[in-house]
Length: 88
Image (tube, rainbow, N blue to C red):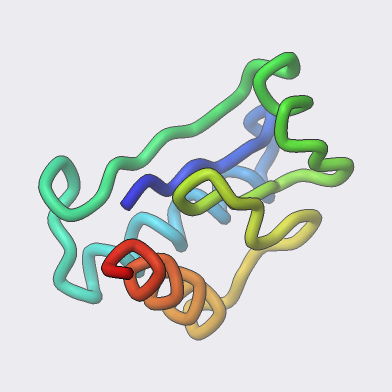
């Protein structure tokens, strides 16, 4: 599974990245084995996803959230959904 955080590095983007990464690890996923994590700060790359508000969260190439920092519960739902879709 690939998790990407789209944002220029503001505090909201950094917090979203922290929550998503910590949640993945707390769910027992191992970075580099079970998931790949990437912060996308390049505006040109972010534009490809058509995200108007940051932070944007992309899982397996699909925008799953934008414009807000997810709660831990929301992050769990997003990651679990990404894992389920990846298995199909």
